[in-house]
Length: 502
Image (cartoon, rainbow, N blue to C red):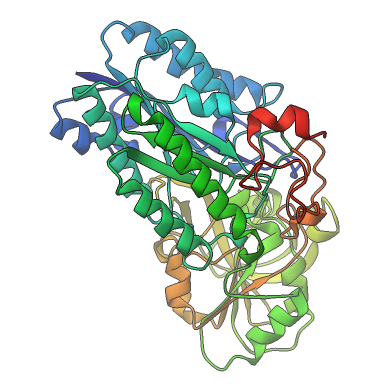
């Protein structure tokens, strides 16, 4: 048996002034594609030969340039055309949160075009990120669709292997199945749905129990992605029946899961400590142990922000403290170009900050160059791939060090500090461009606090300027009344035209 494989990952934040070009993608073709996807062993164990299309991962970025997407999609389509009459199935990792110039969701467009070529019955299995947006057409075009459960995505590799096994089993025992989808009038940010905390813990346990039933192949709850305005934004429920005969039961299970999530809508909250920027900084200054991690949540590069805001840096510069601060990172390509020409130990006066708006206001610094390094992959990304570079400087007459970066790439794991030439143990407080703290840092930090800063990843969902989303939508709208709702208190997408207006 033969299976076509490929991956497309982009979280498109439309609130930044830059677009995602082909240069921002980690591209893998041929054997490199298979290696980067990390699923070779499962298929080999099942005597399945893999046919690679493309691995294209840009992580979190801006809206995707149409020409970049056209190239990526062409690699999927061209590979399918060349191998259409010898493949038995398709295995894809499609994140679900892309937005392409003039086209909308790139993930949806890829699946639509592949399904058009493959016909209605060729099995297509999709792994996706829970922070992606779905729609009924997309879900029902997939044979198997399952998302990660954990946020942050510590189960990414496990999910890839699980879905690969599902596909292999289906190829050995063919069944005509497709995913069941329900849309929820609920919109959440990732920072309000961390899996180590309630209510997500209970939701995940509920899905685990559903999957123990032989009639259910898999189920998923999709948080959604809120950083670009689109008609498919919001939470979604996916249940995949084991067989065609199990479809009615899968629909019933999807009803129950949707109702379960909806009933918990008031329980979603920020996980861990959160505070205003001034209070978050004071908490770090007052804390007697180290290290402290402060996350600059409004400039969260793991959700597509630019990483160039200097707001917290300016806060600290105004503060008299002997605590050693590290900013990991501040993106300023022009400043990086200047400091990258300097030798270690060289003194330099630089202007740091791109000056795009008040949040990225430039500051004049007298500094000493300390070291330089690479910004590498984290979690499910290739840890050997280089996504950017940094030069580490010390601000004279302060206790502040800054990783000046040429790109807004996230530093989320301790091994990345090693690649960047940083001894993280030398610092009392580390400021990172994240929302919720990632597991590596959470384990390392004696105190972690999310600073509720302004920016492209603003945490207050009700303040986001949505125009195209389904309405009403909780918590933006008052959803306490059941007027116009079905028996579960939920809308399904097929009812949206009648019951909603934008």
